[in-house]
Length: 116
Image 1 (cartoon, rainbow, N blue to C red):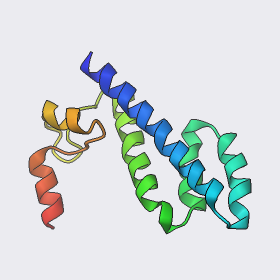
Image 2 (cartoon, rainbow, N blue to C red):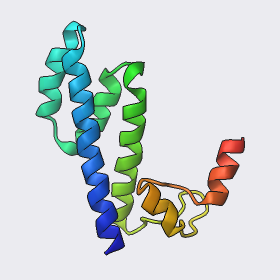
Image 3 (cartoon, rainbow, N blue to C red):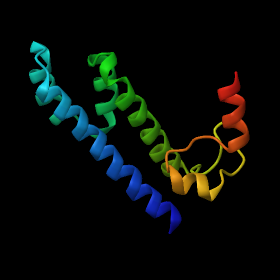
Image 4 (cartoon, rainbow, N blue to C red):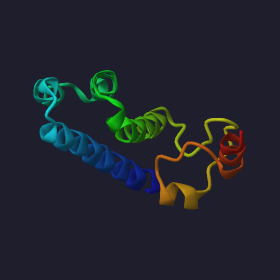
């Protein structure tokens, strides 16, 4: 049940991030962005991130990075590895996953990663 709740939160946030990107593009004066909106709206979910990452500038980096994390967590659910640290493969604390269901590392590995 916990994984299903996290999966819903992940999908909901993915939808929101995509919407935020489309809103930003619609406000852009860059001539290519209007065409990109149409392209993204007709792009399959599994290709959306790659296309957006290739076509968008650095002002979209935070949204693209977040989408990458969300997609990784969804993929982990699909292969039965959700909730395990991507570095040491130990279980990630439930509280961390409750706080952010896209969490990829246990506390120990996250500290190691950020201190380097």
